[in-house]
Picture 1 (cartoon, rainbow, N blue to C red):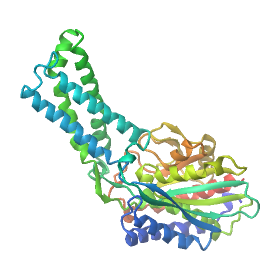
Picture 2 (cartoon, helix red, strand yellow; picture 1 turned 45 degrees about the vertical axis):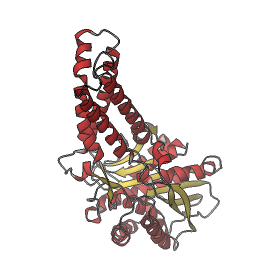
Picture 3 (tube, rainbow, N blue to C red; picture 1 turned 120 degrees about the vertical axis):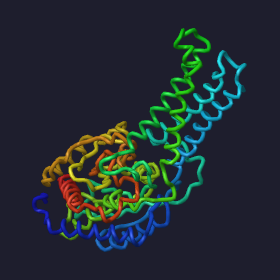
Picture 4 (cartoon, rainbow, N blue to C red; picture 1 turned 90 degrees about the vertical axis):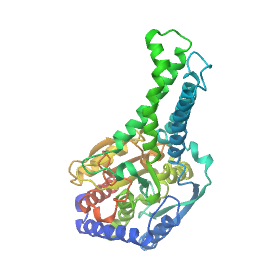
Length: 427
């Protein structure tokens, strides 16, 4: 079947149904912190619906900790702040006067070491999504839910539509932003740049104790430490960055992606479409907001099946269908360090164009990551479809992301792109 033959009445009905279901899930199941019982309850709710039109449904359990991904921001900010403030206080009390050529020699070593270690941890956690801090936290059970729709004949292809059920802890940087005034990027830039500057200043000041740098060296050894006060201020903003007591309703991020996966199979069933040789899978993961934990677990468990069988497999991750003019296929992921599959990204882009979606284009995730990155890192063909203002959006990871701001027109554009991609992949 061509997309032009697919009944738009089915798409429209599913958009309306998805909006009602997203509202119902938020009201009925409450905050969906990664790995909590509300996530599982919402997945079970979805399972009851999908059991009526799918050939197989089920759960896979894995271990994770929801706070391990971002809780290091509290530790890093406190340690860095104390290193700067305490050593500065002790310096002015003449505690370090006889150590090195300057009273600031040992304080610079202490601050430099703390800042460099903090940058290292932040780089592993937020830039590379390496679970460095997980060893310090007790793990708990989380679940990935899947549903399969079999083709008429032998399975020769498989397309997985993936969305995550969990919602994010509130980020105060976006919560106190507005549509016109964005605090996220300036405050994060202040934090990162001040830490890098402190590391550089500490290193120069330490070297200046052993190498004659003239007036510049004298200035750095005597006054360089004052620049660390900027970093101390930045650490205050970092400490209050994440509110672990508040979980976003996650209407757009990412119940829109969750119900995109559900409705992909639901729309095929309602339209009476039976693909010849393509199996369609809806994958509802938990743990994306905890560092892509759910997709990493799924990719590890199914890598052999997806890569070393005769069934060509591709994964289309859907995350936040919300903002007009921002529907993109993300061919670059994880801070633009991971490349999603070019061929499959092109297919999804072409599918969107064939579905008549205006303005759809390729883009890169320059800050953060989507579930597709975990699949791509495992060598599995994947890409992401999303529609979110990268400013970031005023509702991103905060309590404004509720059902009252859902955008049915953007959800419809996403649904049309997904159905078109499934039919095109089947060709």
